[in-house]
Image 1 (cartoon, rainbow, N blue to C red):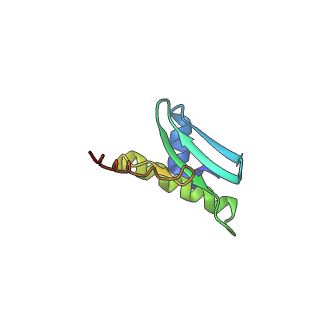
Image 2: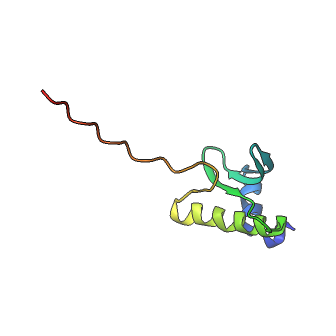
Length: 89
């Protein structure tokens, strides 16, 4: 299987790791990280096979390596801080 997932294979061969499984409250996630960086955090989509999730993970690893962009589908995006209301005197 890893032969068809070249980026997953390269990551593991260089000491990186992938994790597949439940992460409450999500029933299935795929996470990839190397020695010092999280490269991708993906949620399994409705109707998506495990093979399809692994293919997306492989593509996300490639994106992280080539563009320096980590894909995070697990953590909600942080909102910019809200401006403070001005005090009246």
